[in-house]
Image 1 (cartoon, rainbow, N blue to C red):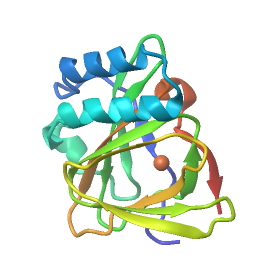
Image 2 (cartoon, rainbow, N blue to C red):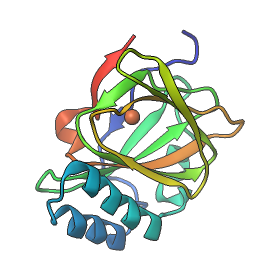
Image 3 (cartoon, rainbow, N blue to C red):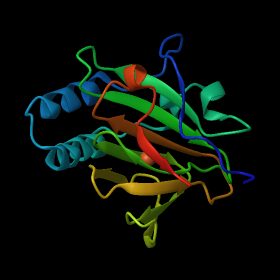
Image 4 (tube, helix red, strand yellow):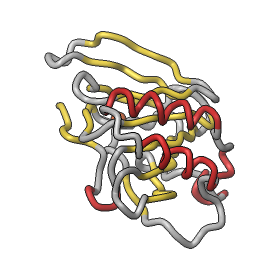
Amino acid sequence: MAGTVLQHVITPPGGFIAGPTDDLIAAVRQVTGMRADWARTAELVADQLRAYLPDPDILTPDQQHGHPDRPAGHVLHAEPDGTFSILGLVWRPGQSTRIHDHITWCVVGVLQGVEHEDLYDEELNLIGTRENHVGEVSGFAPPGDIHRIRNTGTRTAISLHIYGTDITRTGSSARRYYS
Ligand SMILES: [Fe+2]
């Protein structure tokens, strides 16, 4: 389907000045170290991202431009012990993920634009929609995390994603794609 793309494309970290603040990384490290369950961890990490939410300049101007064919993912930090990683995602207008769920908890904060989220049950019935605007942070943990994100706005959307694993090792945050 035109405008529909594969889930996040990952580019390796390094080579740019921008990145998450040390404060954000330290705060996430502190709360993941509490070893709460996934749902609680997502809440705790979301609290930290709200407190330390960066602006779009966390990405370089070139990264902020996005990719013409698909959402562009940029790994900004991968914790050495593999407990979490931080990505910037850039969506041009009309770009979308496929319907998918996740291998771990996830926290998302919108830095620019609007991200439209469709939520599904296990039979892929649409059970909810949400418009996530700049400054909004949400967290979730499997199961019950089947969703699709689309940029339905007119400008490029940028969001920061924190996952409970080292995404450079797993290659993707997606557990499964649904047709
Ligand atoms: Fe997702």
